[in-house]
Structures are given as C-alpha cells and as structure tokens.
Image (tube, rainbow, N blue to C red):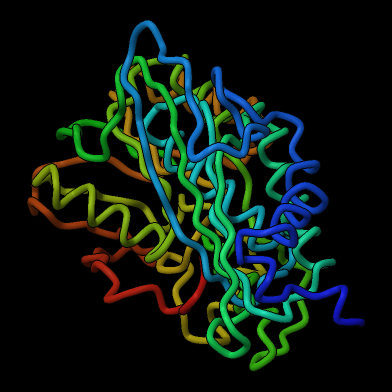
Amino acid sequence: MSEMDKITAMHGAGGAMMDRLLREHILTEFSARSAGRIGLDALDDGATIELPTEGELVVTTDSHVVKPIFFPGGDIGRLAAAGTLNDLAVMGARPLALTLGLILEEGFPLADLTRIISSIAGVLDEIGVPLIAGDTKVMGKGELDRIAINTTGIGVAAHAVSDSAISPGDVVIVTGTIGDHGMALLACREEFHLETKLESDVAPIWPLVERALAAGGIKAMKDPTRGGLAAVLNEMAGKANVTIEVDEAEIPIRNPVRGIGSLLGISPLTVANEGKAVIVTAPDRADAVLRALRAHPLGKDAAIIGKVTDEYPGKVILGTEVGGRRFLEMPLGDPVPRIC
C-alpha cells in the first residue's frame, strides 16, 4: 500500500486535501444529503431541517470505538449509523437526519474508510434518511486506535416514548434473539480465535418499531446495547419503581450464543445487542404488538418474555429454566469492552 492510499494529517487540516477526501471518498457515497434548505452539499458550517408541523423533535448522539472495526455481520460504520438511528426508534421517533463525525488515525487505509462510509450510506438508504452534516479530524500515528465515529440523529415523534412509563400488569416483549452482537464480536477477536458462523445483529430497527407503534398500546421501549437485556430491564424497573419478572425459557437465544457464553463464562443476558428492542405494552395490546413484530423479518423471533409486577419494586426477577427464581442484577458494566 502506497502513502497515497492512506490517511495523512493533511486530510484533517481543512485545505485542499481534506476537500478532496470529502468529495471523492465520502459525499458521493450518500444518495440523500439534505433535509431542508441547506444540506451537506453546501459544505457550510451547518445544515437546516424543515420543522415538522406537529409532534416532538428527538435528538440523540453516540460515539463508537468498536474493536475489531470489521466483524461478522457488519463494521463500525453500520454500527455507528444503526446504533444512533435505533436510539431514535425506541423513543418512537421517525428518523429525519443524521450527522457524522470521523476521527481517523494517520495512516488509516483509504480503502477501509471507503468501505466504512459505504456501510453508513447503506444503512441510511435502507430507511431513507439523509446525511446532512459532518466533520473529519486526523490524529497522529499511535494517538488513536485507527478510527472513532460520532453520529447524531434527529427524529420526530407524535409523542415520544420513554423507557419508564410502565406499571404492574404490563407485558414485556423482546423483538428477537438476545446476545448476538456481543458474542459475535467476542468470537472474532484475535485473543479468542473461536470458529463460528454467528453474526452480529446490527441493523436499523425503525421499520420494525414503526409496525409495533401502529399496533398501539406501547408504554416503553429501549434498545439493549451495553449491558444487554439485564441492564435494560433493571433500568426500566428502577426508574418506574416496579418489578419486572422474566421467564428464562421464553428469552430467545441462539445456540451458538449459548455455546460461546458457556465457554467464556459470560451470560448472553449481559452482552450488547445492536438490532433489537425491549418493548413494554399494555396487556390488552401485547398479542397485537407481537403479531406486528413477527410480520417483519427483523422481528420473526419476537417473544413475550415476562410481565411487570409490584413484588420487589426496582428489581428484576428471573424465573430460571429449572423452576427457580432469582434476582437478575444490573451488570457492573458490559463484560466485553469496546463492543460498540
């Protein structure tokens, strides 16, 4: 690889080299680049968004330093785009636009950057969202581990959904199998060298969530990323001061995820997911929401896994597969560092 095929400090210096990088390797990858009068093509100091006539604007931001940057089922680009858009989705917000901040290590291959940008563009094309603004910086060799990405998402919701408006009697649903992303990344890391066909579940879930919202009765949603299902359930129970009871036998988990978890001593309930949501519904709408989810490919493994009670306020109870009951504690942190 020649020096011409690598990122240099000049690519982040704001001159002709940076302009060429943007125009030849980034902008052309995105089919939609405007959500208002001033869009990305203007390369101005900001972009405009046409305000919706009703509803609430929802804004979220996230930074991504995943390792490795390319993994089975995705890469850091797909993760950065889908992760932020999914944060909007679980608040019931239709994504309107995304911004992109790139921090690159000097010497980073241009071919890898092009591949990552193409993945981001692919996610945006999947759900019809424009990239409207961005920023690029270059760090010296050794000052950064290859690449870090920040994305900010803007969406609009008729009435934003929180993660805590739940009460006893409500029903808990997961939209698919748990633990795929975290275990897939663990398996492909060089220190483990585990052979498996398991892939990350990273995907934008707005089309799936939109169907569930249309079914009605949704009271709370959250995507189980860092800390996995265990962290999300504990956050919900704690904020609402209720008990969430889940049945271990009803939680959908792929056999490879169970196997890797057993081998490494890590519970699939505590590792990140990047294409799933936890949804709490009113009891009389649970079946309708489940049918709506299962009608979409991303929701074919959706399942009712539990209910909300008031037995131990702020706690999560796991009904085990052998008939016992125990508290499912909040993880101290994700057992897998740099997972997203």
